[in-house]
Every structure is written in C-alpha cells, then in structure tokens.
Image (cartoon, rainbow, N blue to C red):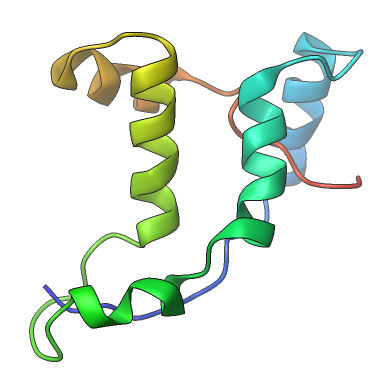
Length: 96
C-alpha cells in the first residue's frame, strides 16, 4: 500500500450537530483527541513508512485514532472495528 497524504477531514455538519447534542458540555476525551490530532500528526510524518507504489492505504491519522480509542477502551481488534462503525463521539470539529 502507498500513502496519498491528506489532512484530517472536516466532519459533516449533521454528524457534528449530533455529537454536540450528545455531549453538550464538550467533556468527552475522544472528541478532544480528534480535535488536537492535526496539531500533533500529519500524514507527511509517515511517508517514509509506506512504499511509493501500490494501492493507497488508510491515512495514518485514521489508524492512530483507532489505536488510541482501542487502548483507551480496552477493546479487542474485532471490538474496535465494530466500535469504529458505530461511534459518533469521535467525530468532533475543532472550534466550531
């Protein structure tokens, strides 16, 4: 797999609204991590770990989020995969 760097993507407006409705005080560690990740990591930091040729792999920032959440919640790989598809609180937009 190769790397096609791109920044942390913005969150759809409806997803952002639902996340804020679920956590009106914004006191959710997962949302805070998602907000600060772009200030700590960028895809370009990981370019040397990916081959130049091949299908694009998942962006490192997505993999980092999944690993952090998996560790925080003590989930197995299978549980983490299921959580990724069902969690909305990790989708927070910084400053909005």
